[in-house]
Length: 274
Image (cartoon, rainbow, N blue to C red; front, side, top):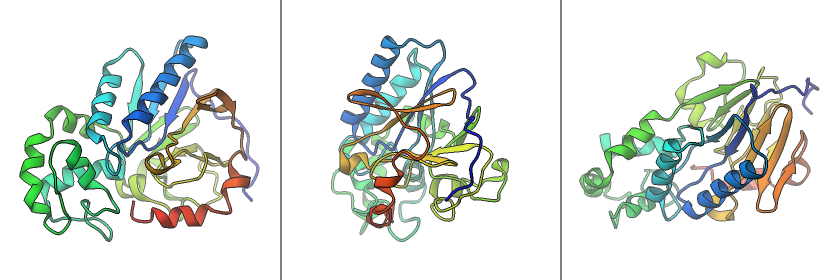
């Protein structure tokens, strides 16, 4: 069990809404953004901010619609910050070199879901067997504004006592020296670390059955594309809550662990090539 630590994780006077991995589920994103706006209408706050944890594209049916919605959010009156996910990074990588792949499978392989992203831009029949065949069509179909949005996404965001990243951090490495690879891809040794990172890390990337609130991190990715649950954590001062369809629910340290811990390995194995 993790060593006790002071439960002080200020948000610099802000109310932060951290949203997990969307993966092309525009319907779920619109629902969550609607809940956030409804929460702010019911409980006004002078300094709200939405923090999107990355992985906006792939697997789900409407990656294009998700990016368009996030561009609209960025231009709206509601302040928002956006992190780069490993899946989001594949767009530029594919356009640079269509035969390139990371880890064990090509982006267009079903396990990674890039073909669903191309389909949402009107490029059908994309295949890992012949990735170059659809590269030019995708380059023509992918708007410059969408690429500019992805290029502007941050690798990490620090607000008060929280550090927001897509995947996690490498234990024992100073925050300023964390690599891009780890910030968007790491699982172990981050997930099993009981180290006090000095900041509470809020992340997505690794699927959990429900939001897990550990003393040193909060895991927010609840597998929206398959589970139908896109989670939103609300951080305000020292308070941590979940914002679900029924409203706000307190989610203090230890929440999500008793039910989530036994099947965690099984869920990760399903998504090992994420």
